[in-house]
Each structure stands twice: as structure tokens, then as C-alpha cells.
Length: 393
Image 1 (cartoon, one colour):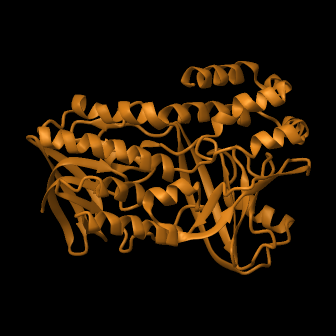
Image 2 (tube, rainbow, N blue to C red):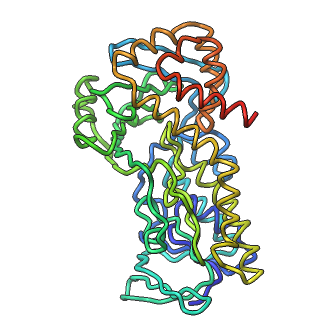
Image 3 (cartoon, helix red, strand yellow):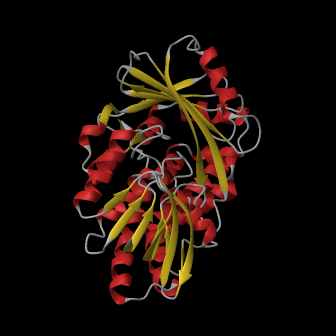
């Protein structure tokens, strides 16, 4: 088979790219037999993500606030009068995105693992491991939307994420009484280097956490959390695990190659979510790809336009997110408890209620205005973060 563009990975990011390259011969290659399986995602996104994908049927629940639990046991609730996030059926969401790509003219090949590529003149010869053994196909442009272990990115020499968060989540067969709040728990004994969550999803509840790449396995902390909350005996529908790549590599392009989504470590450093940022990057990748293919120029220099575009868009927020993450990971449990006491006041909670999970850095300036003493926890980093935000404004 010949194609102008081949995307490795049939998740929402790869499918979003494919749906926007309708003027080209586009093929999506997915290693699993079924799109949307296995699921490796919490499924909590801003409503704008559902709108971008036109996937309203995948929504399971609306979230309008959060309960933050600090290491010492203090809890703080922040509520809003509007929906701040939605819980989605991730498998259904993925399949919807893929169907949109197919309707736009993309061909979908499932059950085929990408093995590698070779350059033959101005073309790329791809090798796939399919149902009947090895297959080959040629393309002008290869796009890696194949996750944090991107084989496309590795073989193109594009490097990996600066950091990896290990995550695990169990879906419990129980309904939370409070459906509009997600609980977030922090602390070295709960989820070192990240956080834990208890997310109501209608008749089921998702409990999960992430931990830094060093130390004990995340399931150790998950079992401890379930036991502490008296949830260890509740029936489990399924358990999933995965890796969140934090911090993009220096380049996300090469001759005849682009990488997007988790393959380019475009996940948000604060929350770990990668659907919104990946779909935004896919838009810029598609615009660049269409022009480059039509011009017949797939050189790294030509494709670098994609890198410039996505970094000018979501890249700035990712940079600020890395700074916020550095401040957070440097806090001891005692300092986290101090932060909790400082934030547990009405003016600070009013600021937090305006937050946007896709743009958390926008809270930095108004929070410091409400609680100036927060700067003492990391004067240099927080000061730099504020200056970066002010330059953007």
C-alpha cells in the first residue's frame, strides 16, 4: 500500500490529525485489534475537549469542583457554579474520534504493529507486523502518535520525555454520594511526586494515583489508599496502569517525520492530561503536513514549522507547568500542610474556583495577589513563573 501520510497510533491525537488531512491519502495504523482498547486514562477533561471532538455521547458525568486533602488530613473544598470538567468513557471517545477520521477519508488499519522504517530516496518504506506476518508500505510522511515509548520518535532520533510519571487506576463498583466533586490527595505517603484522585463516574468510581519514576510501584500506594478509605473490599471492575511523559524533547520533527501527543511528551505537567494538548498539537501538525506534502518538501527544515507552531500555542503553558511542578515536588509534607492553611480562605478559594485544568498557570498571579506569602515556598521559581505569564499577557 502507498500513502502520502501514515499515522502510527489510532488514539484521539492520531485520529484528530487524520481527520484534518482529508485532502491527502492518509492511513492510520493501530497495533491493537480494537480502537479504544486498552484504556489507559483517567478520563477527566475540560468540556472543550468534548466539543473539539464532537463526542458528547461519551460524557459520563460533570464535575464542578474539587476537594483537596493535604498530608495532615486537612480538607478544602472549592466549588463552582459551572462545569469545570467532564468524565468521559475513554474507549467510546477514542472510537468516535477514529470514526470521524474515517468519515473524512482516512483508512484505518488495526492489528498491525509498526516495526520500523527505511528511507528510500524521498519516500519512507515502513515495515508492519500484521495478522499474516510482515507487511510493507510506502509513505511521504510518517507521523508518530504512538505513545510515550514512541518507536517512530526513537528511530528518528528525536529523544524522549524529561520525566515519566507512573500511574495506576482501579474502577470500583460503587456510586459516590457526591457526584460533582473530584477528590485530590497529596503527600509523600499518598502519591510521592504527583497526586491521587477519587473520581465519581455515575455508578462507578475511579480511584488512582501517579508517582515519580523512582521508588516503589504505584500499586503499593493505591492499595494503601484503598485500605485507608475502607474501599479495599469493594468490587473492582478493572484496573489499568500507564506512563505519563512530562517535558517534550528538544525536537518533534525530522526528515519525513513528525511526532505528536504522548510521543512528543505534550502531556500537561501539572495534571498529567494529554488529550487536549495532543489534539491542539495534531491540528498544527496537520496544517504543516498538508502544505509540506503538496509542496513536495518533507525536509526537517520544512517540517520544523510544526514545532514552532505548537510551541507558540501550547508550548508556553507546558513550560510554565514544568515550573509549577518543580515548585510542587520541592515541597515537603509539612510545607504542603502550610500551603493548605494559607489557601483555606474565601478569597483564595474564589480564585481557585476560576481555574482551568488546561491552563493552570493562569492561577499563579491572582493566587499570589490573594495570598502573597505563598511566594516564600520558592521565591525564584514562582517569581520567574509570574514574569513569564506577564510577558504572555
